[in-house]
Length: 199
Image (cartoon, rainbow, N blue to C red; front, side, top):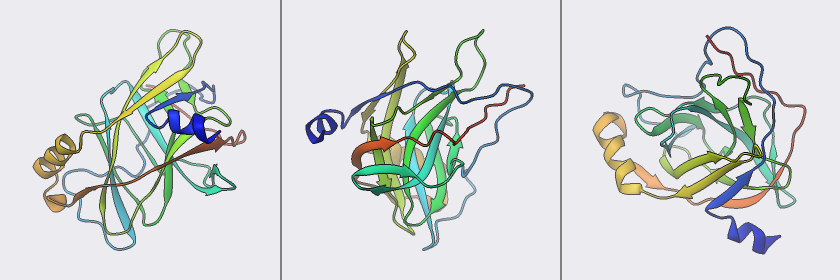
C-alpha cells in the first residue's frame, strides 16, 4: 500500500460517486474569502489552491488521519466553491486537517452525473493547516473518464500563486508559504451527503 500511495503522490484516482440532488438555485460557497479579507488570526488559517477548471465546485472536508487512513469528521464541507481566476482562497480553523474529496458540476449537462468523489481506500492528499498563516496547497487539474472515474493531477506553481495573492489580496501580501501534505488512503463515509442545486 505504501508503494502504491507513493506512486500516487501527484496523480490520484478518484472513483465516481453519485450523491448530489439537482433542484432550484445556486450552490452557496463555504469558507471562501475575497480581496477585502483580513489576515488570519492565530485561530484561523488561509489556504490557497490552484484550480484551473471553473466548471466545477471543489469540496474540501475536515478530518483526521487515524490508523493510517483519512477519516472525514465533519458532515459538511469546510471549503466549497468554484475557482476565481484560477484559485480557490478560503479561511478554515487553525490546525484543521483538510482534504479534497469531491467535485460538483456547476451546471447540469443533460443527464450526466453531477458529483464525483473519492473512492474507498483511494489515496487522498491531506493538509494540516497552521494558524495565522497563508498556506499554498498546490495546483489540481481534473479529468473525467468514460467509466465515470475522476482523475486529479497535482502540480506546483508557487510563484504564480504568490503573484496572484500579492496582486489581489492586500492583507495577505508576502505571506503565502508552501505547505507539506500527506498521502494516505481515504476511509469512506457513505452516510454523508452533498447537495448541488441549480438555477
